[in-house]
Image (cartoon, rainbow over all chains, first blue to last red; front, side, top):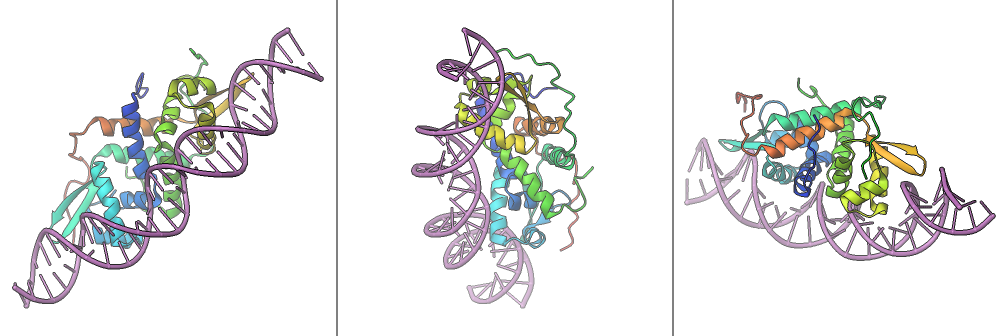
Length: 115
Length: 115
DNA sequence: TCGTCATATGAACAGATCTTCAACTATGAG
DNA sequence: CTCATAGTTGAAGATCTGTTCATATGACGA
């Protein structure tokens, strides 16, 4: 249930890299645009109201992190989510921001600090 | 199933804020330290090998974003995850970085683009 | 081949942000 | 009250990062 008994620093860095990529509003909007059917760069730019250049810069980072996947069809390149874990991650975070009143955590009941 | 038909820019900004907070290695390590039982600031500092001052700075941001929750017991302040959505978010992202070979997405199967 | 559309890339600047250091508040013991 | 411990806060600086502009690549049609 818990993420892991002990998470190495390397994993923490890798994890942080992923979250950091989703942590920019413009770049996140690019990702959100790719939640549905595969979409080409110019359409992403139109929907997000970002310049094609900027979109391309962001797409390169998202591709490198395997958050998005690219596929060329003729002149256009279509982008989709690389795997469903990213979708779940975003869904969970949406649930978090959507429930401001929910502060009662079920887990971590007893205070048992080792040292 | 999908996150939402259309996500507003405000939500995107709010979402990005959350991800950005998890996007720093030091700050993420602070959060990871709080995955288990409530833990006090000095213990977080020891485990993460960060200065108490820096830990406190990070904790303030994480508290403000309702990622962590604080509770005072005597001189010490104990921190825990504010809700389970954050735990899920991290778990999903761990799954993402742990499975580099998984590039076949179950959703978004057919490429059905007009253009 | 040439021209055009779609996308990608590199350099450079402005703005944000992580970290440190010092000083400050709060709680409890003697 | 005084002291020590635990934690917080503010300012300042070095670093990183998002964005823009200009240029380059790739693909298709004439």
